Every structure is written in structure tokens, then in C-alpha cells.
Length: 76
View (tube, rainbow, N blue to C red):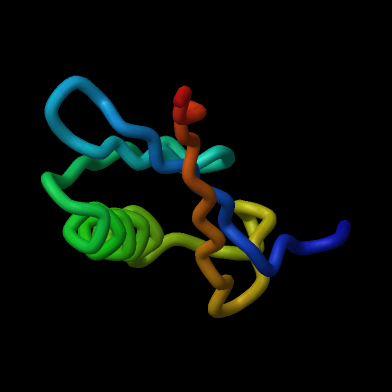
């Protein structure tokens, strides 16, 4: 079994806040700014994985967090 070295997450702009959601983990958080959202996401993922057997979750030790952002196109 190949272990994942990266946890994927997506940030999108909600109605009044940014919302971050992990693709492979049941982790969702939000923030008013992008910086706050990323900080909250890092904390939420860390708390979710605390005390878990990463190998059993299919994760390598110390996985990194890769974040992408969904944006609406800007029209002229």
C-alpha cells in the first residue's frame, strides 16, 4: 500500500467567509481572511490527526498540506 505524503484541501469563497475543506479527511473550517482560513485549516487538520494511526489512514508520517483555491472568473 502506497502512503499519501500530501493532504489535499480546497478553499472557496462563501457568502461572507472563506471555507476550507479537505478532500480526503472529514475536516472543514472557515475564516474571514485567507490567512485566517489557512491557519484554521492547519489547526483543524492537526487536531483531527492527533493520536491517530497515520498509517491506518493511508498517510505517511508528517504529511504536508496542499491547498488550492477555487475562484470565480473576473468579467470586464
